[in-house]
Image 1 (cartoon, rainbow, N blue to C red):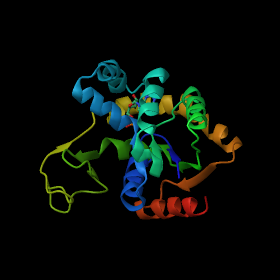
Image 2 (cartoon, protein in one colour):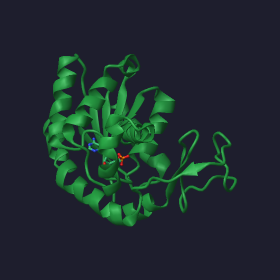
Image 3 (spheres, rainbow, N blue to C red):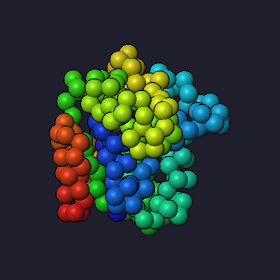
Length: 216
Ligand code: AMP
């Protein structure tokens, strides 16, 4: 099964995608993670994307489409994928339709994670991840069980995203509203859109997503 998790920054797309990947074996395709890896490695893509990401703006469509097209073609994606952070514009959605049609793949569900905008900045500004295994934490909502030690791998190193600050969030939210929100009617018209309550507790959001997938 191939799905998209759609929602503004801080909606919980990455958290839910990670859990689905672990439990169901679908592959999480986070374009944000791919871009951050490209920035870290200093590749040509990373050099182009860095300042745009730090400013909270969107990386040009042609770069994103090329990135996802290469990734979807890899053999592990045959067992199903979860798009997390892609598509973010109508041009990306159209390119995705086209590449799926060309490769005989299908989009089964688009899951909108509906959230209260007021809560997003608080969620985003407090989040951090284990630098070794990528497990996500939050200053207020999900601290490690032992202070300063990752619950999953025991690492003592954590990192915070440079764009997870209140100022950049304003630009990221504006980009979401202007460019990504129009994808809701786009997918509704195709009959694949389902909505879950992204403000519910993490386990409940996950339960709702699994219910959507079971009905797919
Ligand atoms: P995310 O981790 O999904 O919040 O993405 C972090 C940043 O990466 C975004 O603010 C954009 O600058 C960039 N980015 C990620 N995915 C896309 C995409 N599909 N299109 C354009 N820019 C993207």
